[in-house]
Image (cartoon, rainbow, N blue to C red):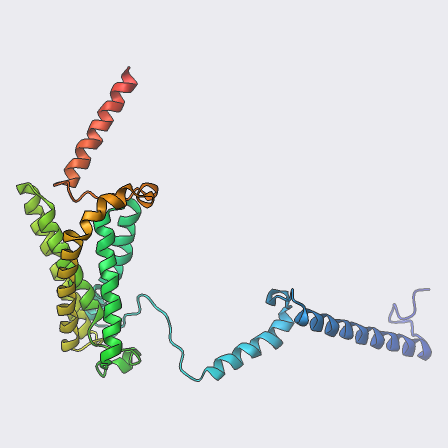
Length: 295
């Protein structure tokens, strides 16, 4: 004979069924009280951590708090985006200019960061520092003037920011002026100087396209991009004079400092043609190594 109720044919007496039901209810209440006690002690414990919540507790305790916090904020949320550039769907010119508008980002991340990691040139470090100071000044001017962007800002969802002067235009024209002056004064021999003229003028089409893209895409007015271009060009020229007339005298000191020795920071601006210099030294080092191996 099996256990009472273990098969469909066996029927438990009524008293046994009632007793079993009472035990089941009592066990369920005991478990619920234990869960409540654990939850309360965890919430008041100094070791309490959100990760200790079960999925049930997270859904019914944490999520309502987050939702109430977001609702209480009142102001609309704003995204932090690095490449948030919009253009009209199907507009191929706008698509191209949207990528052109990202040139400052490519220069900053792909150019200066990689150059510092692999070259450690003081001239480039101070070049980048000047661009950072220029952008800080741009934000200060925007905050002071508080000129609105064009009406297209509603579609672009950027009406909460100011438009005068254009930071993209200021960045690119600072870069273009400084880079042109640097290439024109860097190379000494005739062949290198001819190449420097080509490099110096290569950045200007990008600067002008960036200026045009900000107007075409609706982010700025013509006056705003020209104001940014003029301010950037002036600051780029002034910063070049400051670096190469005054700060450059401190380059040897920085090279010999603990920081310079630790991070291999160097200045090669006194070398007329760095590419030729590195090429000749690399060949000489290879030949010297081959001779040592032959011995």
